[in-house]
Length: 367
Image (cartoon, rainbow, N blue to C red):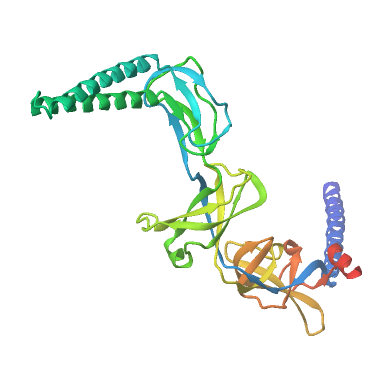
């Protein structure tokens, strides 16, 4: 009997505790429902109107900077370097002497050839004077003339061989890093220095075959490189390849860029915009107003409900080119429509919003 009464007491105690807990949770749930039933305050957003702007149609591509003339200077004949006439990074003109290779043996050979040619010339003159007097035969004359011509050819050969011991700049340009030293023996074809013509300079890039009708020689081109930020390099299309690559279905384009300050160097990665002469009118919005999504890009358009409350509507758009932090809207948006420019992440379709004035807009209004 005593055990049964204790059991009843425990059951009553547990009932009171559990009832209190359930009652408190029920009270909290009611408070949450009451809070959720209250209207949420409008989200604070920045807004802009879609505008019509005139943009020049452009095709974006990537390419590589190439020198108009660029080679690695090397020697044609072996020998020991006697003189080095340049330093790394020098600017040279066509014909400037870069290095001289020891040519003592070649100079001696040239003197020998000239002496032989002088002797052959004297012999030829004697035979020529005797031929009209029939003191020599025609075959002796022909032999003397052939010996003289051969001697002169050997002189020219020796002079050409000697000239190869002087390495000259093949064109105007800037030198790279010197790769040889005075007194060094260099075998045939040893790299001496790199030379590139930097102004003007080429940019080579490829376009899809579908863009081929939109590009012509002389069209303006604007290139940018990562090494020179916020700088546009302008030029024109110089040449279009006559064939399309059958594997990639792309065509190679070459444009000439101004590079007076020589900021562009061969091998740089470049982003190239090929523009067309005519302007087109496009609807533009700030880049921050567009939410890029795997299933399609969209913007939030601000409108009004029946009770005159401002709400946002999610609208899918087709985006185009981006310029100066603005995006061209090809379809889905009309001029003058008000859209959210900042604060897209905390919005959902049908949510009330309140437009706040940006500091920049407030400054413009006060002025």
